[in-house]
Amino acid sequence: MPGSANRPVGRRAFVLGATAAAGTALTGTAHAAGFGWSDDGSAYVVDTGARLVFKVSKSTGDLTSLVYRGTEYQGYGGMNSHIESGLGASTVSIRQSGSTILVSVTHGTLRHYYAARSGENNVYLWTNKADTSVSATRYIVRVKKGAFLNDEPDSYTYAPTAIEASDVFRKSDGQTRSKHYAKRRVMDYDYIGWSAGGVGLWMVRSNHEKASGGPFYRSLLRHQSADGGGLYEILYYGQNQTEDQRFGLQGPYVIAFTDGGAPSSALFPGTLTTPWADSLGIAGYVPASGRGKVAGVGMSGRDTAYPYTVGIANAAAQYWGSARSSDGYFSLSGVLPGTYTLTVFKGELAVYTTSVSVSAGGTTTLNTIAIPSSNDPSDASAIWRIGDWNGTPAGFKNADLMTYAHPSDVRAASWTGNVVIGNGETAAFPCYLWKDVNSGILVYFRLTAAQAATAHTLRIGVTTAYANGRPQVTVNDTWTSAVPSPPTQPNTRSLTNGSYRGNNHTFTYSVPASAWKTDAGQYNVLSIDVVSGSGTTGFLSAGTAVDAIDLLA
Image 1 (cartoon, helix red, strand yellow):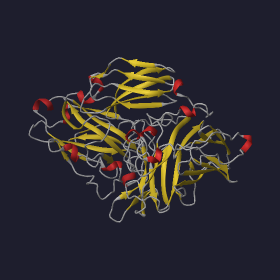
Image 2 (spheres, helix red, strand yellow):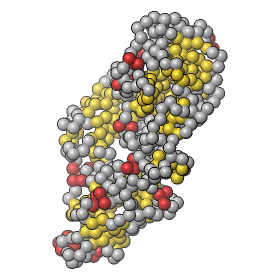
Image 3 (cartoon, one colour):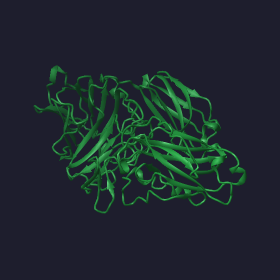
């Protein structure tokens, strides 16, 4: 583990405290100086014996104090760290089992847990949400003002002007900030936090088996404001959500302190093991022996220019992993028993699905997965193509910026402007189209006489939509497509809060030969309009994100 902050302290010590709530046994053997717990009347005080002392309210289960090396870090705007915005009245108990202390919180059907290990400066957390009776969608660590500062996209400390929904802000220099602008997909990070003055404070995420949205989901991870900072573990977040909520035990996720460096990789999802928690009685806990594994020996039919991801999901759980670039081998471990839909993604575009069953203690081995060329729209012969079919707007104008900025950001190139095929068309085409901003964008292209003599299929792939925005097309002012039906998409903001991830969908238009210019020297003009009866104005008008556009041969 990097740095001494995560290493056990090999000294024996006494146990702090000698009584328990509701008759819970409190005895146990401590292994690090100061390791143990006490009751200060309003909170259980847990000393890990590694310079970390934290308090949990006996009445609410809130984390009310987080002291590391004698400095208090908990406290944001007078609020505690807790599930959602705080559970309120709860039943809270504590017990010690050898070198582990477990604090259990019960609020209706919800169960939440804090665990401390002797000699570690970590707090392990689990949350078991059984149903919708409790609005528990996140855990937030609220950090004191001034402890850590940042002016990254996910900060609004220095951006006092709200421009959208009271959570998107503009700085005086025209750059935008929001806690939503985390840049990262879930699969792109293991931890989030800050480091300053020789102290690192991190939230190490769980494996998200009970979360929703898959490997490409984006959600708020941290923020800074005038009152302090926040670190999040999002268990379910309704914004731009593509899946129903999953229920059951999620965790552990970890609040980790270090000497300024990154948290130990031993805490990361995929590597963290918790055999010490097997006998703690955590509701919904499934040990490693009750889980299985899925492995694939390889894949054929891949486009090696793109990364491939394999995900499995059902109504109860989700897992994912990267396919090896050399041969497509993949392995998913720690899987709860059940039958899952397995999906192979080229970039973020699903190109193969099948069913797979997993049993406790077993490994389900799959033979080489053959991806049919018909499953990858890139394999279709096209007269011209803007972008590529990878399930993302990558390569389009402003695409990279939109994962960490508002469309109105000063750094964004103009959202308007026409496009000429053969003249840098992908970089010139905007990644997003809105009814009230750049609807009616024109694409100019030539066809040979032979091409103009026949009908062709036009395809527009999208990755999400806001307010049912979808494309209607007109060719040469002589032929206009029907208004397509809107596909199923999230019903919340997306394009303005850093996410293009929704449900990939392809619109197809059969353009008759009579629509084309017969003179091969003349440009054909394709107009793409955004249509919808919903949305408001500007960047909150109906819109959509583009994956690829092509005219098939």
